[in-house]
Structures are given as structure tokens and as C-alpha cells.
Image 1: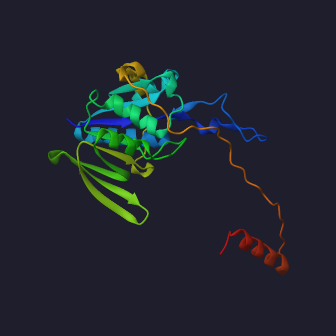
Image 2: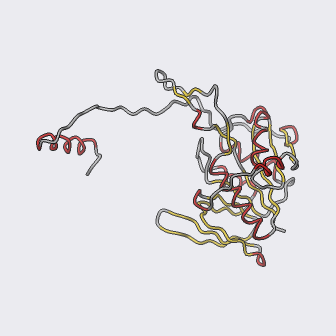
Length: 257
């Protein structure tokens, strides 16, 4: 039976972020969290393959212990079980750390044929975790996937990659890792029955002690500030000379060419 592992990240709900107008600092005191929307597509694609091929699906995340509520959310979306890789130091990991932690937990401990990740996360969107994880596991990787087919009798996948200049079709033997785009599917909304049933599904806790190694960052985030937009508050009328001034202003600012 095909074994699928789908990775997800627990992120701040951007609708709850407030901004201090003076310092442009983000106010995160009362934010709520959610599964990254891109990772919802990864989970949904795993469930689609399960429906077609009877695959076993497990979800995995790296987070601090306080993020345990994410497990109920992801399990309500269909996976059979979850792996919760957690430690207090996993609060603000950079992509290389996240990939290294996932690889250390998966290698030799979690069986898989296919790993599905979102193309990026809604907070950082670095698009690095998937390729880093594939490299550390020593498996093939394909990114920007918007269509996926599993060839059961040949144990391989055929995937379509949405590139800037067209669609590229690739055939990859398993094991492999793919990152999927949002247009690959429409994530389901869990029913009340699925939400209640999620509490009964197994969860395996993997702590930093079990991994037996440290994960030092290569990058450090020193601060995050909101972007600003300076407006010139220019007014233009309908007279020919004013329309000419408007066109000149647009040409000067590079809005039209």
C-alpha cells in the first residue's frame, strides 16, 4: 500500500495581525493560528490519492509544544495519524532548520513512499523546506506541481509542473517528494463528525531528546516591520491640461510606459 507523508506548518492567521502605525511593528498579542493554506492543499492531495489508491496518510509538523491544537485540525482533514515533532526551541525556525528537523525525525523512523508539501508557507513563503528535506533524505524532488497521477503498477508518479513558460510533465520513481501549488485542488472543510473523530486518531510525539542532535540556525531574524505606502494625494480634473499633467505624473512614476 502506498504510504504518504504530508507536511504542514502552524502559522499566524494574518487576519489577526495589527500594525502600530508609528513604529510599523506587528502587534501579535491576540493572534490566532491556523494550518498554512498552502499546506491544506498538500493534505487534500494526499487524501485524494488515498481515495483513489487506498493509501495510508500521515501528517507531520515541527512546532513548539504549545501548538498541539494543530493536530486536531489536521487530523479532521483526513490523515490516519500525525507525528508531532516538538520542542520549545522550535518556535521560530528558519527553513534549513525545519528541513533538518523533519529529516532527522523521518529518516529511519517513519515509513513513506511519497512526501507531499505545500509550495511555501503563508508566513515566510521561502519555498525551501521541501527541497531541503528531499536533499537530506536523498530522494527525488519536484516542485510547482499542479497535477499528480500515481502509476500503481509501476510505483511511480507522473506530475505536471506549472512553470513560467509552460507545463512540464515529469515521471518520478518512488520514494520522492513533491511540493504542490494552490490550484491543484480545493481543500475540504471538515464536518462536525470529522472534527470529533480527530480526537481518537493516534499521535506520535517526537521530542528533541529523541532526535539526539541540535539544529543551529544559519539565519537570524532581527525584526519584522510592516510595509508602507506613501501617497502623494494629487488631484486632477477633466480639463485637457490637467489630463496632460496626470499622464506626465504616471509616466514619471513608471506606472505606464
